[in-house]
Image (cartoon, rainbow, N blue to C red; front, side):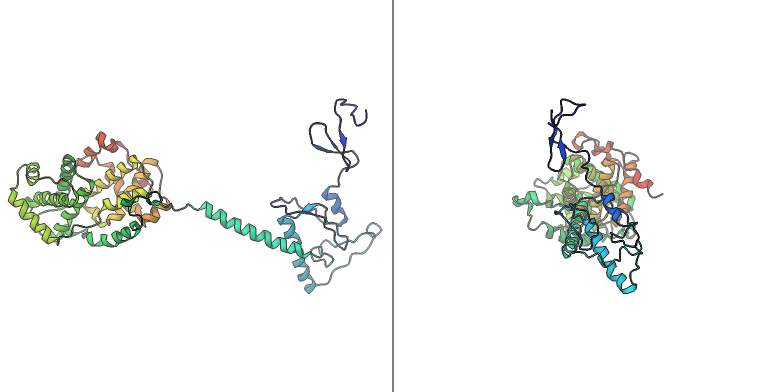
Length: 436
């Protein structure tokens, strides 16, 4: 039977117009014997000593063109115009013009083997004036280079971590004040300097010290937890205490009275339901009379010039946690870490915004076991990872000793189910190890 294979009688193929055979039922082109298409290396033998064309990767085949030189130079037929091939042609044209100005072409003596062909000296092949680059090849090269450049820029943009718009989902929420939120926090960053106190103000106090301050704040954290007050109230209470002690001398017998009165003022500013004075006296084991509390309230509010609207660390914590795309576990751990810092006098050297950012950064490192600080967090906090490391390492040291010693109010608070047993999470010790 015509077209059948004697060794494979069941296979019948159809003859292609170019001499190829389509295997029956497979659709695969198989070259017929004796009709093999010439390999690229065979075609290039017309050039004495010329290296074979390298294999080019077809990045963007624009079209398949039949390129035939007017000087019978062997240019392969049906070769796709790739970027690499176009670059070869353009490069040869440029080198040709340079060579013409430097030295004449060297002639190659003819021989019987090459008398019917144009033989090009290997050393002068690239500078040969017999090779003209068509204009469309030059335009193609320029176009492909521009496309490559655009693709590289796009790849760089994709590789860079984007900054998320954390307010995009709140545009329809009037309480989120999306139109003004950025301006508000820019104002808070400027105003926080006025709410800070000198980190060495305790040196001006003759009857109290930083240890007494730590005992007072540790006790107030427990009082705050017992009264179930708002988080804002605790941060404002401590801010009022420090600002008052920085400008007014207090004897140690009155230090607890200062703390109780500061909490009363903070409750009046932040809370909807304010504890009565008798409750604060009772929690102080009746160490002070009602009149003493009210007199101290007048003294404090006048000393502070009625300025209770200050940006505390809590104000920045809410915003920065949103930028960190936090969950409940990260939020609780961040507040646990920053409340440990409230007790420590040495942390007054850091502004509230940096304390908030460092607490979140430390909490992320604690939970994930590696450094975590996104471009989004850096953008909204205005702090880089390097700026947070000093404060963060101090926080880790406080975390290590949180359950030890006498001042364990924060640790006990965050060891309850209400706060997710957050105090049981181990500290990020690797942040301290990196210093050595």
